[in-house]
Image (cartoon, rainbow, N blue to C red; front, side):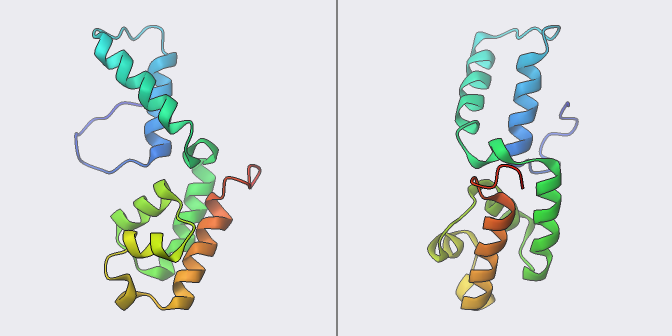
Amino acid sequence: MEVLKECSAYLSNYEVLNILQSIKANKKQKMKQNQLASITYQTIRYLENTSCKIQSPEKIKDFLRAMEPFKLTKCEILTLLNVCPKTPLEIQLIVEDSEDRLTDEEVDSLLQVVANYLNENEQDG
């Protein structure tokens, strides 16, 4: 996968991990700078210790469909996908004006959606 237009779209941690792993695995592609190799290695190590390691395109698609009723911005949804919040406080920090835009029940539902689709304990989901 190659980035064609810089800043034309936001990438999830899962997508970044896949891109960097393919760069690392591609023996034909020579890394001209040691710094790039170091950044790639360190970023992969970091992302492999986050919830994106168990995500898949199917889980992400299902998660995005489940997020539609909440009427959140694309950036808020991406942050939810990357952070996988587990508490109402985390939702409040991610969703702008969440106390005005979401009821307590909606926050609970939102946390349930995150747990159902992105929970680290559901490896086979």
